[in-house]
Length: 155
Image (cartoon, rainbow, N blue to C red; front, side, top):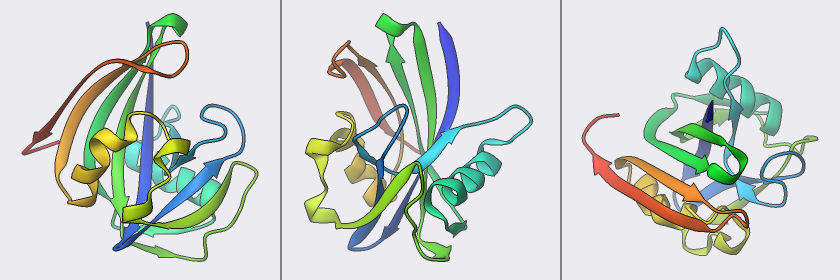
């Protein structure tokens, strides 16, 4: 099974979060944080800064790693190892790009119906600054077939 290393950054300035509507490629039509694939020769955090800049037009400051989740897609024979970060501060103004359209949401009004099905499982831990690890197995229609998720002391 092919393994892809990715990152995800959600800007959280309580009581709001910055998400982007994915406009193309994997995850199109879903609200998500900013992020993507780690390229050869890049560290996960270097890729995080690059992806947020490319997709959102902003430079994040002091991202904090809170989670690692594996997403398995057995019907497509690949899995994603996703490193999840929170940033509270950034420089610039969130800007629409070819990849994403930004919007702020109140934490009590997250658009879960238009997000990945796994997001409601871990977002509360994320918002509460808890560290977590997990694995979600997805079926052909992006439904969750199985999952494991736990709070951890260290990432």
